[in-house]
Image (tube, rainbow, N blue to C red; front, side):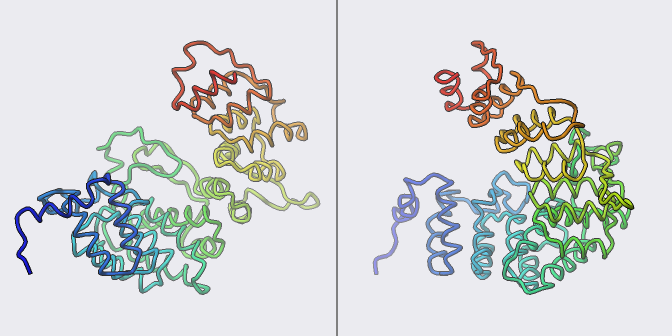
Length: 405
């Protein structure tokens, strides 16, 4: 066999010369999900020098979860291997020091692995006190566990129990923001720095709330019930990280999450637990919600006309004009269609709905051609000017304004 020459080093690069970086990462995902160690080894051999010629991955700081090269979830080979059930492929990727999106990989493991598999993935990633843990990751893992179709009864609860117990014993990151809050506070605020470290009970509550958000989004009543019977008081006040003066209630956040996820059974279960829906003697169920406007806005942004109708039918009230404007800004035609007809059936919702140019140009700024076209077809006042084209974000919107309006 002929010995390799110096010119042969360029061979891997030449084979992938026609692919851009995203295509190379997709090829890596396909190889990781194939289950073939030989195929993955070959693709790693071909791609690695193309992505970072002449350098090892550690020289680029890729072990840092905050690296700019932390792959997006849909380009992450680690989660691709886990979703396909090939954990040894994940181990091979780690051995080659390839960049792994820890959050996406953990979320995939929560949905597609047994409890033992999830524990193995956590150990492999070395996540004892890594910054990869965050409120969003906990929420995503709980949502994924609740969506697992192949788990036997009780398996999702067992995964969640182990996860919460594990996280209570490790150091946690300072989150960028909390659910339903703002991120306007300064990075180095004293309140933010104490978010996890000050009070174990506070940490325990926030972990369970993050998990409950994921369970509400996927509509998992078993997980919600387990959390509420294992330390989560959903009527507790929630102080949003980075802005201690901005407080919301956990029950409102959870009902909002269920409505945004179009999970009406979960929304009703949570509303009863929170006391939003209660039985009045001789009057049936009565609505006692405290933040109706936010719930309507969340349902409208989530594109669920069914959730908006559920709120109305259960007695929640707010200005439907504002809800309609919110749906227009979010480009949710289905919700606007429902509101334009349904508002006539409710006498206590703050009057009718006026179609004005604010809604139309809101849809234009949101780059929703479908919503803008629908509003135009309903006779919405437009008031177009030459400056209007400056708000367009796509050629499709420019074409719509120029050719149809």
